[in-house]
Image (cartoon, rainbow, N blue to C red; front, side, top):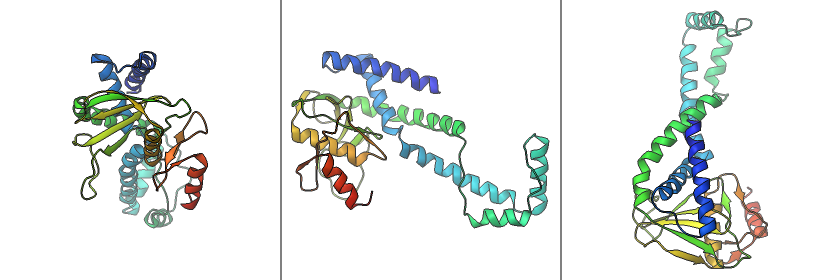
Length: 255
C-alpha cells in the first residue's frame, strides 16, 4: 500500500514541476495524475486518521470489557497469552482490572503499522469514489500577480467551499454543483476546480491571494506553512492582515 502512495507522489511531483516550468495545466494522463494527488491530499490529513482511529479505539474498549465479563474467562485469556509467548508477568487481580476497565479512565493506542495500512485502504477506496466527479470539474491555474505576495499551505491543503451562497448550513461535497476546490501547488500557483466555470489561466490580485490564504488557515488542523513571514489573509472585517494579526487573533481565541 505504501508503495502505491509513493508511486503517486513521485508521478505528481513530476507533473507539478512541469506546471512550474511551463505555467500550463497538464492534459490527459498527467491531468489524471494531478487530480489523483488532489484526491489523496483531501483525505490524507490528521483529521481523517483521527476519524477512523476512533471506532478502532472504541472497539478496543468494548473487547476489554468482554474479556473481563467473568473471572474464569479472564484467567483463560491470561493462560492463552502465556502459551503464545506474551509476557504476562505476575497474575493481575481480576477485580482490580475489571474496575480499571469499567472506570473508562484510560486510552487505547492503535498499533501504528495496523492503523497506517487500515487508513491507506480506506483512503484509496474514497479516492476511487470521488475521482469521477473531480475529473468532471473544469480545472484552472491561478498565478501570483505581485511578487511580494505568496500562497501559504496547511496540513489540510485542499479547501472545498461553496462558490455561491446557499441557504442553511449544508456542507459542500466534492460531487455538488456550485462548489470550488482550491489547492495551493506552490507559493506562486494555486489549482482551482469548478463545475460551472470554464478552465482558464488566471492572475490573483493581492486581495484574492489573501482570501485563498484565509481558507488555508481556516481548513488547517494543526499547522500552516509559509516560505516567509509575509503572510497576507483577510480578517473578519474583510481587510488584509499580516502574520502579527493572525497571532493576535489566535491569542484572543486562546489557541
